[in-house]
Image 1 (cartoon, rainbow, N blue to C red):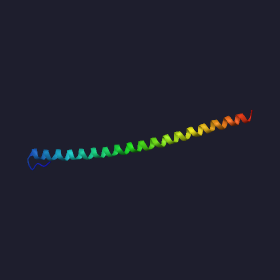
Image 2: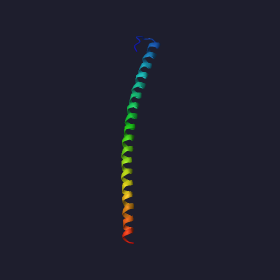
Image 3: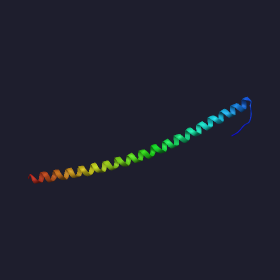
Image 4: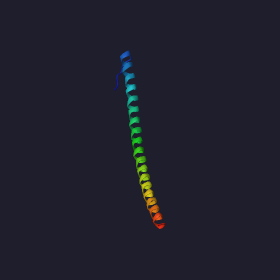
Length: 74
């Protein structure tokens, strides 16, 4: 917003506009940062779920292997 005045009210109005612009800029930066963090959390969660699935498969294979090992020695 524009207010063309050289008096104290005009200066105060100008200062508030500068402050408002700064707040908006920071809000936009915060929004972008939040979106990036959410994306990274989703990505990392997917990686962890994939790792967990791999570990479960490996554990199952190990249990089966041990079962066969014990059966061979009976």
